[in-house]
Image 1 (cartoon, rainbow, N blue to C red):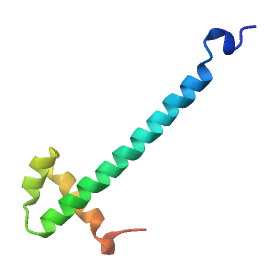
Image 2 (image 1 turned 90 degrees about the horizontal axis):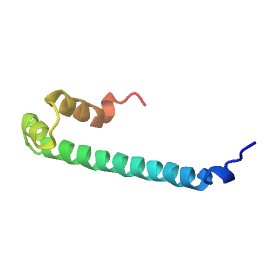
Image 3 (image 1 turned 60 degrees about the vertical axis):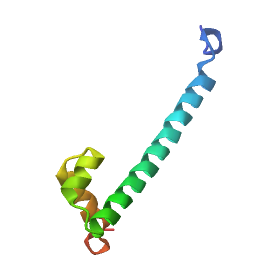
Length: 77
């Protein structure tokens, strides 16, 4: 019978790769929050939603969703 140690000791490498994925996911979530906050602030100050969509390289319905999720009165939490 072959054990993991005999075929390359994958455990530590897999754990490291898993941690890297978790770290990247956290960075991604933080970047999304920062971008979305900036979009909401810009639109609140009069920046056009279609311009925000163009600048963020997303479709305008995505901007509408970001804006609707930022309104505490519309939240279902």
